[in-house]
Image (cartoon, rainbow over all chains, first blue to last red; front, side, top):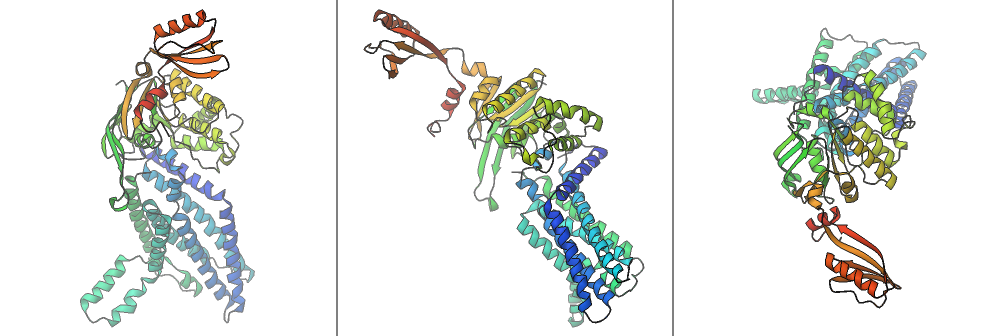
Length: 265
Length: 308
């Protein structure tokens, strides 16, 4: 369906939808409970550093960044899978799409709104981690950089959840998005684990080809580098950014195409 | 172009998974809604009214047929800027206040802020919610939700207003207010297309109606033409006629003491009954003529459904 919108009008609609999505989250008690839970979890896991043998700072960083990373990912997945489905189920979408709002603007608006919510969530957790580190005299500015890379991963995960949410139920969406997350964090080990044991050139090519098709979320993570104080390779940031932009672009396009002709029963 | 809305042979089937359990909802719906009128789209529950309205508003896609809205095809999404839609039992974001909802919807419609600042109080007053706009929608009653729904449907000053069961679930006062608002919209030159199964409301305000039964329009036209002006029968109340035998062509509906309610279906028999009552010393207390009602017309198209 042609939207008939000018670019400026579509942009205004995306902003209105994003701001409403943000309002929806921040007016929900669940948001604050989750945030408080995340900060408490972070403090607890950091405090566990005292029990560990070795550098307290390193253990706090390791456990803290892992907590921030996993908790943000789970929030992105479980909020993202209901982003479109709940609008249809609660019939609130009828009032929006019966107006001159294209379905693509609707999807993008919801996506941008959730990304704003996740940014606030991530910022709160990162600041909490930095406070814990500062208490031990180890203020680590690179934690903010690591959080930036975690946010890139959230951009991708939310786009995956949005895609599945626009074509299926929350249960199927959750399973598929969690599968994407797990594959994304293990696929980089595939060539290392399998290629040395393969004798056939074709089998080796197949495994490497498969690795290039599968998502690789480790391309976006610098948590280990920050913990062990290893600098990132030149061009790492640009590669991560391009990978994110390309993957999010493909996923949003696929979601828009799938949603374009969907009957809203 | 005189039509506000034109549907020609619209078909819709909902298919289950793997095409099992298909449900053929619309079977060639054809209707014409002229501009500037109130058009009632009537039918029992499950007839396909909401499906038709969802197709018109772009929420569903027809399998076949043509739809033209204000002279534009369904494919042109910009036409939705000229229509206002109130869904059946409207669902809104309940964390928003009434004012926030109207502001949000206004931004989606691309209405500039200064215009919204002027328009929102006018609409709130029109729907009787001025002073309630700071309340969150979760605190609104069903009637208030219906009215804020109507306000958001009118934000863009639409040429065509589409309302799905606007009076359903409202108390008599709420129903009357919505009816008055619909009449006011017609007075402003707007076209109102509304679905309903509350025939009394439709009969009071509609200029034209279409009756949809099992996905097919079985009758369409101006209400006056469909109902006709002829009297179908008279109900006559006679007092002091306990022993009176009514003339042939009459049927006694009830007896209460010496008062009898008699139904007469021919004018000459009515005169005969009045003469005979007077001759026997009884008094005729009332003669009520009955024309065919919308309900009669409606029920004539749903044999077997009337007994439900």
